[in-house]
Image (cartoon, rainbow, N blue to C red; front, side, top):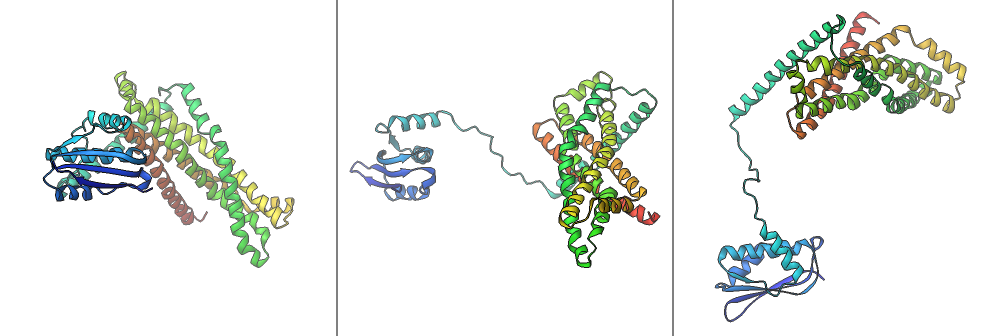
Length: 375
């Protein structure tokens, strides 16, 4: 039964508001402006009485509707009679009205003048540029101290970090690399099959994976996984003032926290990239041998003959650059996080986006250099 209401006026100018039917959120609440119109049409009003005996079912929607009525009549100075309300409804209304709404919690939109907004944005941009150069300088100094044997960080932390960004990442790298190999083989076979050249699926997959795809996919995976982890970890430490504690003790956070992470990921990603190459080629091998009747020996010899040594080195150089970019980006975003939980999330997201963008830009740059050098 749908909800309904009606208003009747007694001789002493008291309004009887009778509610009936089902008053639930799913059924919809009547527009309160229509109720106010009925109040205005029945003026003068000395009091109001609520009659709820016809209600079959209800939830919080009924409480909200009644509270709106009581607030409106209170502003008009009209007395409300709530003596006949069911105890459970009267209790909820009393509880809702017992705690007044806090003032100042609603945020109104603030219009900032254009010049002030432009100035704030410009200051933020140049300030971030300055912070980045300071961070880069501290990182260069830390590497100098590392090669001089003077860097201070715990070896145990370094081995834990390198395990987290290498061995722990093997499952996701295996899955993505295998799928990339399968996809490359499927896509390539569509065109190669037209010329009866299915055997060259091995060439396509082998060169594509070893020269760039293995390094790129590994880099993207590690940007979303480890780069985000670095930003979240260091951002949380910044929020908890642990970074300030290190500086107070005279320990450089870049040397103690950033340096082992950068070294670990720069070492781990090339190794993961080599592993991804093997798994990706195996994915192409599955498609070639099962769908196009290429023998194991033919696929193997075709792959070995297609992949040149310089292809392998280009992929390894790419992955090393990716590892350095992802780790420095994640650590920079974490160290320059504001001191709030929301800022940690923003820094983590920004680290992932910046890491992936830097991978794409670095890939384009390295590819251009290889084209110029003819390799």
